[in-house]
Image (tube, rainbow, N blue to C red):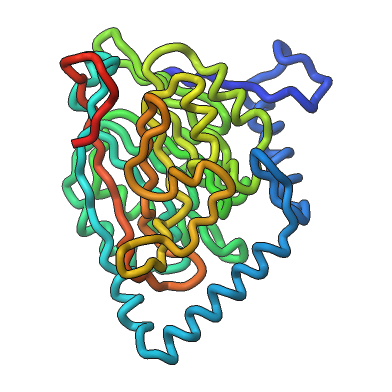
Length: 335
């Protein structure tokens, strides 16, 4: 049995009283706030508010880089790289993982952006065909172009996930490219969308807590960090689009933090070093495995692309993460 535990945000709403609200009105409050933030000509992250001017400069810079790749003859290579993602499998062991969840398998997807590169969906579908996992965890940026219909992102996602067997739940959070309407679209696609709230996954009389946040890169509100702090006790997993509140999650005692957003850099130097990751804070979580205190984190390189349909020295990825119970006390370990 899975139980959703809502984490309410009433900090800027003096009325109505929390006890008078229904789950429906909680979603409405979130949606009104999210739409308000989307209309503003600035972006809100945990530490600062910034104008859209920086984003406009970045878009122009990306287009200039794509033009240079075309002129130099490297464009086709970048396209081929973007259409050749990896399917990674690895294990992480925790001393406090409930025994009933030993061997629990998670398919982690992020930044699918199928509206930017539709042909990637068929490739991903072939790679995932027949996969069996316990849970699917999607860490945002399903969509890409705000002018494109959501169906251009959701329909391909449905197609690839029809090839995957998920025993437990499909859980999702939103990214900075996802509009408020994406929550309802993912609901219809069979996901439990976590909007600064938590879900309990139970088996064998034991449970793990999964807390999911709305995007904190563009649309941060105090409800996000409060959701981390107020989640039910137990073994906790955080699903966030970016690593930018990893320090808050570690302070709240989370064991595992899954995110994406950076695309691993997407266009990297020959040694794989990212040129640009677009993180405003927690830069240690730019890509791959990382650790903050006792918390383990993983930043997916993402399946899709953003800005231009190119990747250099940085393949896209889908990940299968197996949770294990560590026999001895100590820090969690990857292997």
